Amino acid sequence: MFIGEYQHALDEKGRIAIPVKFRRDLEQGAVVTRGLDHCLTIYTASEWEKLATRLANLPMSSANTRAFARLMLAGAMDVTVDAQGRVVLPDYLREYAGLGKKVVLAGLYNRLEVWDSAKWEEFKSRTEIASSDIAEKLGELGV
Image (cartoon, rainbow, N blue to C red):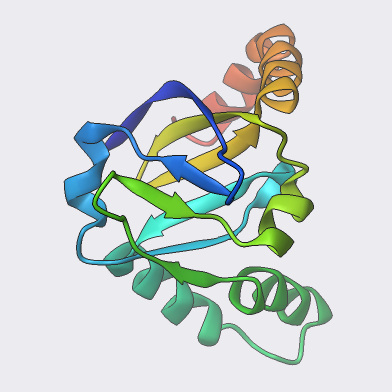
């Protein structure tokens, strides 16, 4: 399970260190892709397979389905954790997420999100202000 918030720096080659406690989960392979809200998402190979299968089974007659599948699948890249516990984030994905030198890895149970540090702080601030409304809507969904 991925949980927590971790501050890291991207090196000049676009590598990011994965927290030690998550490396074992990613040893069997991982996939990084465009996330929602202009972040990147890192999935374990098994979680990626589940998501990709669901996306492949959606009706292709829907423009929204095609657009979302393209965003997630065409933007995906296999990554491996190197001996120092780092993964390389491809240029096009770093550009998509607007990643600077300072980044945040956010653990979200079955995936990791990679955010530019300033964008993460802005997102957190907006979300914290709206937390009561968000909680109410989630309550309507039975959460």
